[in-house]
Length: 140
Image 1: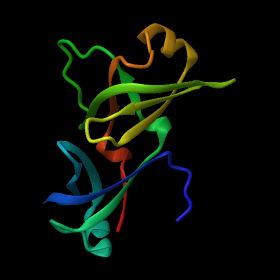
Image 2: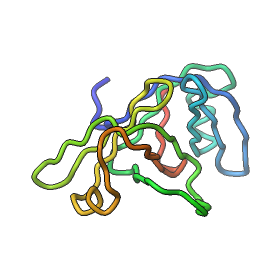
Image 3: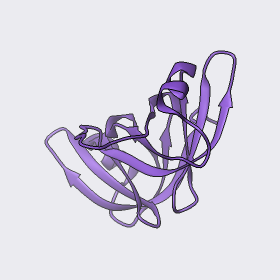
Image 4: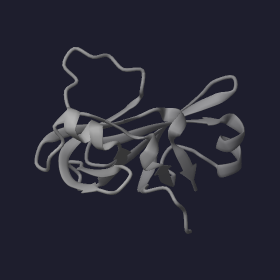
């Protein structure tokens, strides 16, 4: 598979909760890292999504927000993965930031140069990758 999504994870389905139109799928990546996806019930059926099934999780780097201080914040985004900033690549238009999770998995985000400066982004600091469950694409 060739795809433009920068974040590609392998995991297994931990839980499936069906609603009237959509289903919430919780995927375990390894260690304590979990990602929640919201997909249609039709996708659940078509992909055969069930507890224990191996899946590929895709998230575009442009859908990932970077947070360096969550003190006192409550977020509506279901996915908050915390790790250490391991790489900052400043390009001519924007910057790519890599956050290494405790499991060793990497999460990439594309953010503005101003955000890098305002958030004090530098390698070794703790940061969180934040993205909505509706930004997650599953492949099985």
